[in-house]
Image (cartoon, rainbow, N blue to C red; front, side, top):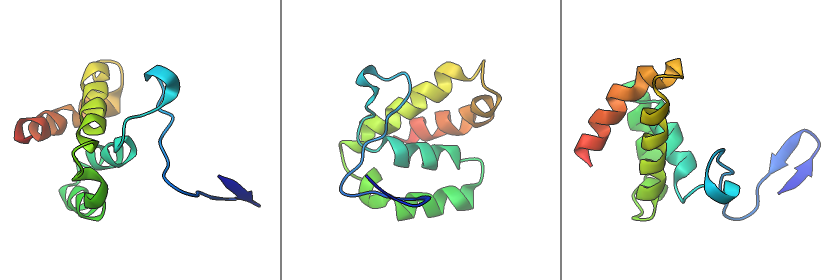
Length: 97
């Protein structure tokens, strides 16, 4: 990662530093899955995100990232209001996998 003023330019593949995950490294597809699942309350937006991020989300190794985000949402739904809101759409998504 290189800094240019207030702008950050990423170089090469990037993996997220997900809080609470061992080693601070997120599985492949974690960021894309987070964006997609967080948008499930707005189906048109979720569909667009899913379409745009298909090159990442359609890879077999992205399933781990997707399941990780699903687990985090469902595990914390009683403590985090937003997670409570998206818990049912996340469950419905899991049922379709």
